[in-house]
Length: 94
Image (cartoon, rainbow, N blue to C red; front, top):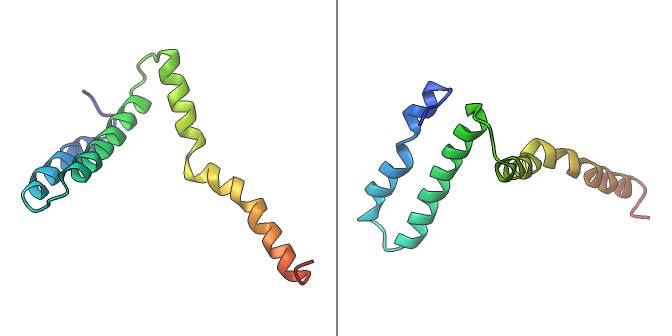
């Protein structure tokens, strides 16, 4: 596995170390396992996105869907809704 950024490699082990540390301290082991797997999946997705390896059509679809869920895209979608609330407030709710 290769990473384009050195700091990603430095933190790649952290979800597993955190899970090992918390394993004896918690009774909610399923939740801990799911959190650890989610963090690991995020790191692996970041590696896949930036690796430059040719992607299969399924990989391309997954990355396109993930890009659609990014915070900056959501912010652009929410702005018209927030603007309509501001307009309603200034017009007295009518």
